[in-house]
Length: 171
Ligand SMILES: Nc1nc2c(ncn2[C@@H]2O[C@H](COP(=O)(O)OP(=O)(O)OP(=O)(O)O)[C@@H](O)[C@H]2O)c(=O)[nH]1
Ligand SMILES: [Mg+2]
Image 1 (cartoon, helix red, strand yellow):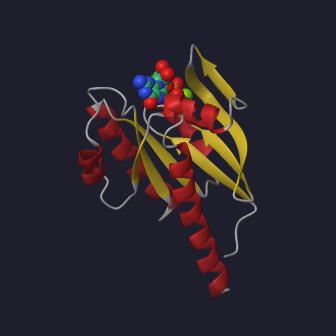
Image 2 (cartoon, helix red, strand yellow):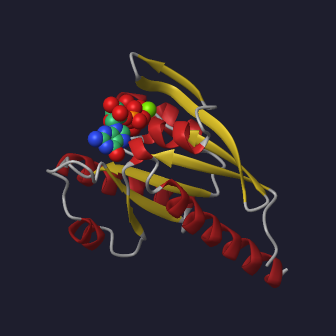
């Protein structure tokens, strides 16, 4: 299968869901964080090598008042990882709204949902979250321990490469 050489992946989602943690651990602490008091107000950025590809990870702010920055950071993405705080029903509802917005702006782009904070006792069960995102893969995560990073990236990048192969085959 022919693969992309360089790819932009955007890690987005509601406030405090774990986006910065995702990029920080995915890059073994080598990421850049533009924030204020631990809250992303600009972006997170890091680059990893994955399966022969250079993957540029861009993290958006979660706060709604920075949604204009979210849209700028997300421009040109080949795929999205939508990180949710599984302990917070509002995070899940807001995640659905963000997903709708992504699809509106980017068409049928690959998206993987990462249901984070599954280590906490009040986490909403993964099956319940799956039922709310019926057409999308939902991966359970404990991002503070790095759990869910490889799985979600692998799934997203394989979807992105499938689309690339389809386009090449049509050309
Ligand atoms: N218990 C638990 N806490 C987590 C997990 N992932 C992230 N956190 C914590 O949740 C808080 C927010 O994490 P961030 O990675 O900053 O979240 P964010 O989505 O980048 O936040 P904003 O940029 O402010 O929207 C931090 O205190 C993290 O340590 C997890 O899997 N389990
Ligand atoms: Mg952040």
